[in-house]
Image (cartoon, rainbow, N blue to C red; front, side, top):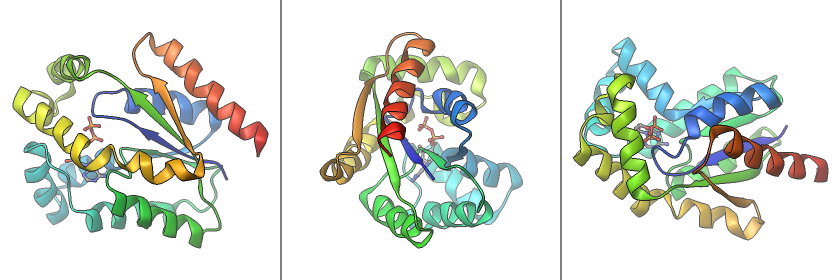
Length: 194
Ligand code: ADP
């Protein structure tokens, strides 16, 4: 199995690039944002609680998202690998993920970190808000809060993987094809070294 973390701030293009990457490398896409939005759509108690935090631009508690990821890993025993999108977002989540993958005899192969400037992020998210139907994309204060949460709690997650030489920074500005080529090149490199 080859498992990838697509890392980066909100609006850096993780969702879009994930769609292309899972098709090319035949991976199972696990997006905690999508899993949470399914819970909201289904009106589950978890979804109701998560929505309050998401609409304020805050993170959902670690145990909630770790539980969802654990179930998703168990539900997909026969895959080439997982592409994690929007997870892990805290160091505690990264540690929990390591343990879960270890139980399955596997590990993270590479962390691909998309880099995009703050102003470009805000522009992209407000633009996405025009069509995404996501309430957290329509209010600039909520968007800026998400970026602050990213800087305070998530950016350091890259440091967790650095000692293992697993992090590759990728410029997340340019055309979709250019960014996809950079991501693919790095994955191919790591796959051939495996
Ligand atoms: P974006 O990358 O644009 O912020 P996501 O769909 O990944 O979009 O996340 C939307 C919201 O869902 C986040 O702002 C946060 O409230 C919640 N969320 C998603 N993933 C996690 C996670 N791993 N830990 C905590 N909260 C999460």
